[in-house]
Length: 67
Image (cartoon, rainbow, N blue to C red; front, top):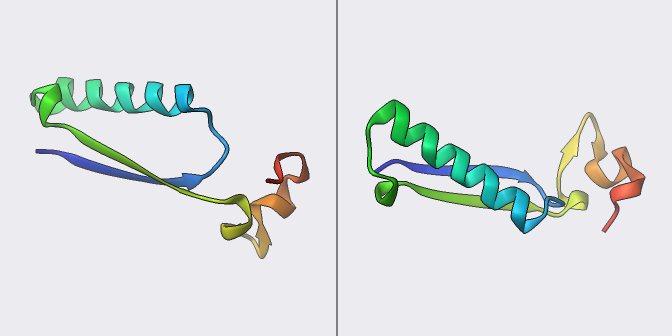
């Protein structure tokens, strides 16, 4: 059973995340020959002020997306 964990900054809609997970599921079905029912995908989201790149939090890097 393939199990995929995705870590990302918060801010995407539920629809965007579901579409991404469907696409990943289909990629595993196509490339690994597994049944879609065997694929498990989990998204771990971090608030923008809990994720940092280059010494700045994601909220600091993009003030328009502050939560």
